[in-house]
Length: 282
Image (cartoon, helix red, strand yellow):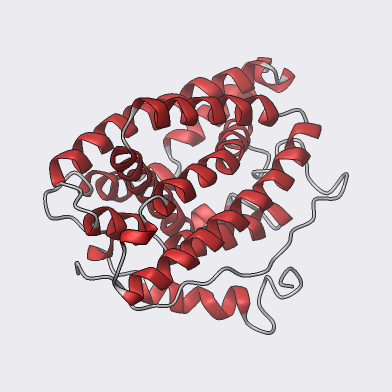
């Protein structure tokens, strides 16, 4: 499937609360490494989502297709909301001892440097590439009970399920804008290769720095157990790695993998009258 999806994309008014004492120090099922990985990823979202919005908005006036124009508006609205809600989560994680403020500042400086170094079209290609990563992780979370089990039953779980759902909804928007404004396959694939190195390299580097600040890291039994569990993570399955690699195929489109059934399954589960997020929706 290579045409723009016609599913509507809209920003939802939603809010999450993280009261003092509402989260354990290692909130991902008491897993040391995964708690730091999720905290690092969350710390990058406010600046990252703002970068995505700027990259897509730069070309918004060149989009003439009415369906895609509406999707761009929905994309921007969703990403602005994601940024706001991750700011709130990051503040709670900072209070719990994770270096989210420092990571946020570093991410902002790095992305502004990218915008000075690269053209707007390459920044849009970077956005499309990173949206592919987030969409694959998101659909892995929504489609894998083992991945969901890692998040327990905390407010973080609800927040990440909401974020995952909306990332799956708008996964093709930046990609379609990139194609619409004349982005080439060569630039798209070259940019993904660059982004892959920086994305996974930054996760490894900044998670390590975060772990070094945590006294629990210096318990060798606990650290080794957590690293062993990471090797079997549902987010590192072969099927997930293959989906990452599909992006580098000429002619690829995010909608080549149909996620309609997944979205239809989760929509009432999350947003229905008795859904998991009923009390969070404004």
